[in-house]
Image (tube, rainbow, N blue to C red; front, side, top):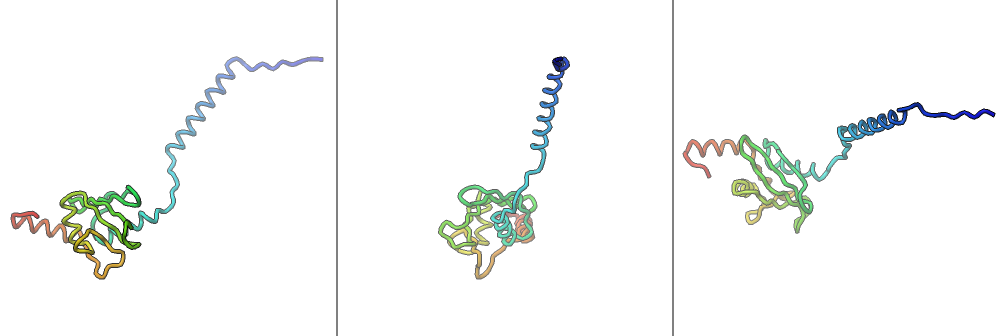
Length: 151
């Protein structure tokens, strides 16, 4: 009987280890760079639709989920930025949202288009929908500069 002893060639184990490490690195690289599949975010779409209806012509710079169903929204018109929280529910009917402005400018602009004179709120089905178009805002700002004042 003859016995055959199979001995790996010298350095063969190192070669396999190096190939495995390189392959593992390639797999991680693909995992980091490949786009992550997502599903349609219906709540985000509702927020964007609400803001686009109320602020026609404004660019929505950012809309991010924040706390307890609320969204942080920043809309832009020229160099103006309007930042606020869009907060649905919390004592309101479905489709309605509270507005929490980021600053005095946002408070004054949102107060003009609020569906209630006492609170900053957008109703899902208002009797009359109030809007603030980018064109209106640019005209207001331009008229203020010509007249020598800004509110």
